[in-house]
Amino acid sequence: MTRITFVILSVLLLASLSSTSNFVLGKVHVRVMNRLGHGRSMQIHCQSQDDDLGCLTVPDGREIEWKFYVNFWGTTLFYCAVQWNGSVWHHFDAYSYKRDDKRCEARCNWMISEDGRLFGFNQKHGTWDVVQFQDAQ
Image (cartoon, rainbow, N blue to C red; front, side, top):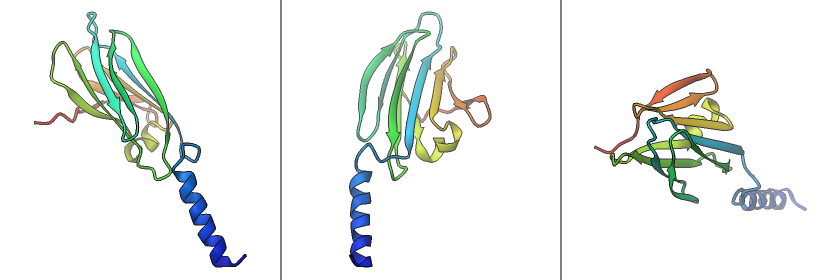
């Protein structure tokens, strides 16, 4: 086998494997917790380019969690919209490889607090950081 043939076959094999969920950068667990208090449920809709988790109701004190594999290209993005008590829908990125690869590694935890603020757990520093919603104006 010539060197050029070997290189071409290697590239084709890599390209075919990268389109499957078995050839990935790592498995990630995302959790979004409802800590609104006072019995307030929240509605949440999360999705990526490939997966739509649907619109779910999360009771006070409960959480949703899902798992996925980061794609080979490192472009995986899960985004969510959340609302409670008839509020406007608030938007945030639940996982962005570029932001979260180091910040939360394999476990990305989010919390909606009693005052309606979004907190993300920073594994690297061991802190809950306030994160601004990406609401359209």
